[in-house]
Length: 237
Image (tube, one colour):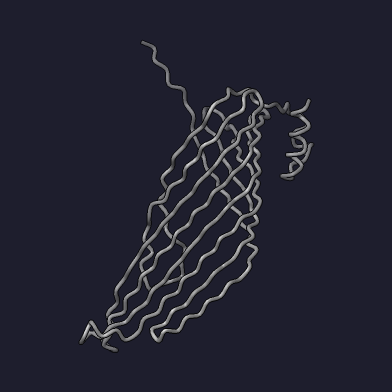
């Protein structure tokens, strides 16, 4: 009964109405206690409007470690996502007699600490979670132009650097709906509200330095949708 009350509050929090489960039996799956660990490699491309440098795909990593509490459907999990990207490009402008160089570097680190509650209802397997998210994001862009006649003659150089650090509450859900014959429909949705600061710095070749700091409230929404297949492997020998 204690778990049923907890599930009722969680369902209301994500906007699920009671009539949707009126004819279903909702129960907490029995699970053994222990740790869960996963490592995923991501192959991503930065969504940037900057045309100075190439926007190639780069590798990132997703690490997860958690602990499952026996016979409760509860877990405590830590996620760590990290993506680092460095690009450079060179453009020759013969009309102006210039070599134009661009360099870009960006880093993204995300840490999520969350507590989860899993439950089942007929063909639906759902995990509700809530916790806190920490984000650190840096981006740097450097531009320089040199004469095509004398490459050592630095005509212009500029550097732009930004950094955002924020923290805030995060909650969401992971769900799998069994379609039958081992196939399933997977969905993930989470939202976070980050409070932090953006630090910006500009440096010019005439020793001009401009610094700014801004407090920022950043909403964050993530969604995923996919299919999966689960099959049992057995050795009949």
